[in-house]
Amino acid sequence: MELSAYRTMWIIVLFDLPTDTAKAKKQYQRFRKDLLEDGFSMMQYSVYYRHCASKENTEVHLERIRSCVPPDGEVRVCQFTDKQFSRMEVYFGKRRIRTEDEPAQLEMF
Image (cartoon, rainbow, N blue to C red; front, side, top):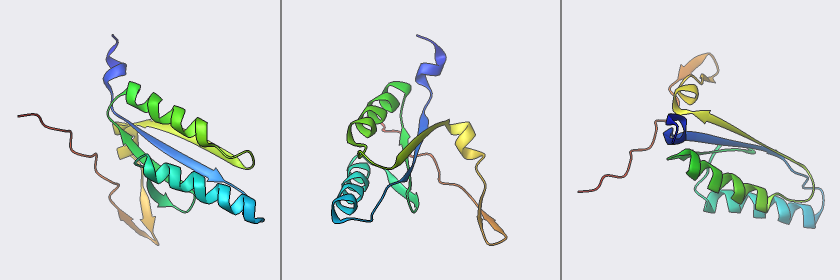
């Protein structure tokens, strides 16, 4: 198996879903809840992220996203390696802060 298959990855989900009707609002809330139940965290409004331990694990979570996309609106998914994700710059006003750390890997004793 190629080396890239062992890389850990970050998934970022960006979405713009309508909330103009009760039905649309419910679909928005359901999509957001599905992301949270699948281990995603909110980075910003309508932007969620998750760390994946391998390329295979990334594919599992991508399939889960595909299966719960609402019929209206737009959902985009980006994938980043740890190195690419660590290059993200985050600003609060003019002050730069560190990005999120990679989660600790499970240790077996």
